[in-house]
Length: 379
Ligand SMILES: Cc1cc2nc3c(=O)[nH]c(=O)nc-3n(C[C@H](O)[C@H](O)[C@H](O)COP(=O)(O)OP(=O)(O)OC[C@H]3O[C@@H](n4cnc5c(N)ncnc54)[C@H](O)[C@@H]3O)c2cc1C
Image 1: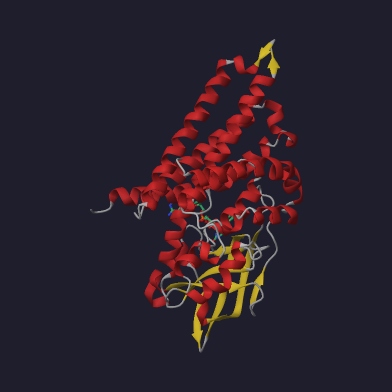
Image 2: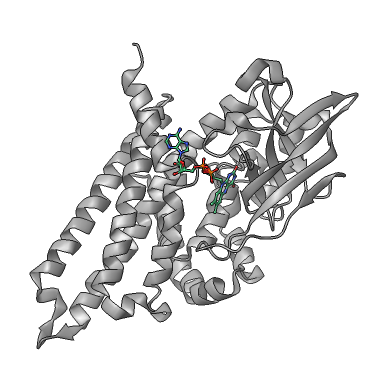
């Protein structure tokens, strides 16, 4: 990725931050399923929570290339911490920045940029996962408020978030054009956040259900106009997919470094395991997967930054990079042998953590559906 000198300097600063501040805490985060407050404060001081928020509202105002650079760097350490930041600065910030009224932006963005308020994005429901259009949560206008009823599940950052972008139906007769987006605050009457889920990986990053029971939301917290929610969610997810691909590249970088280090260190049969061609070829395949993922990710970033729809490029990048990461993580465990299976090496946690990237923000099957749909579309 070719970035200007300012962003390259920020990349170097981030790499130091990840090595000195995040990496030593990865075991603690993994075992306690929480992020230490001190780490959140240090991340805030680096501007990490305001990455994509315009400078006018206290953020760094990075474009997609800068955001993806940060994803790569954070991908090198705790997946849970990386996801807290990625979700907050990605799908949870984008709808407010792009659709929010001036007063909404003034009310929410500065506190989100400083990290005082963490954000969350709520689309998925029990019967509406890969098919979000099947959602049932409703929002009925009543005077100067909307009344929300329904539930959401698997919502990232829910356990620590103050601000939620919530999709709900304002006009069922209009199908997906009747879905709208609202900013809902923790503490609004009728809004309840459930217990944090126990997950396979991604420890430190909370995931919880939400319930809305006659929840009162000020009419001014509607993002854009009624009916803009679904289209906005699709645009937000297209960008999100590219950032997941970028994070996957950073994780692959780290796993490849760990494997080369271990292969040069570990001896068996009277020689370093780095001398065994079987392992060398595994390592070579890991690098090819990583490099191809990075090229596809860059293609998608470039297309989005040129203002193109880039649905195809984003889905290709996410599908390829996340599937490649799955193969790379599996090979990393294999190269480390028994050590790869032990918690102390931190390889098995990466193997568990990265399983999620093939599921959320559109599973691999959904990416294939999108790609085939684009190919088969009448031009
Ligand atoms: C840890 C975690 C964090 C998450 N964070 C968020 C969040 O912050 N906000 C949010 O809104 N959601 C979030 N999600 C939800 C996530 O986006 C969904 O889980 C995902 O979209 C899949 O939906 P589902 O779980 O209902 O699976 P289902 O849709 O039930 O899918 C089950 C299987 O069927 C396949 N399938 C479904 N439809 C098709 C089809 N048309 N063609 C081919 N195969 C198909 C799927 O690929 C999958 O293999 C999160 C999920 C997890 C696990």
